[in-house]
Image (cartoon, rainbow, N blue to C red; front, side, top):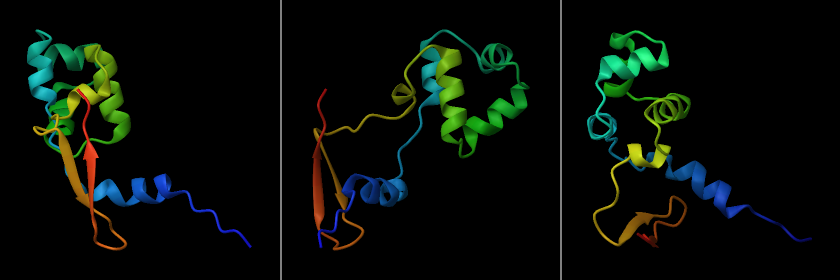
Length: 102
């Protein structure tokens, strides 16, 4: 019997605990927009958008914000400052180094 394990799916499910800093406000400013203008473009209330940005936005919300700003969703996240990212395997605790290409 051969057991196949989709390691990427297993890894992806467990990496959700890694905190990445969002830089939505910075991207909005870089694009020459305000929160109010972005909210109008998204057809939502400015207060609701502000709460989403300052809270814990869902992937769906991040995609909507990125579409309205006109940027890839990855631009909304702070980029790692070093060339490699180290995380710990949730199963064995070993360090995993991930090289970041720029």
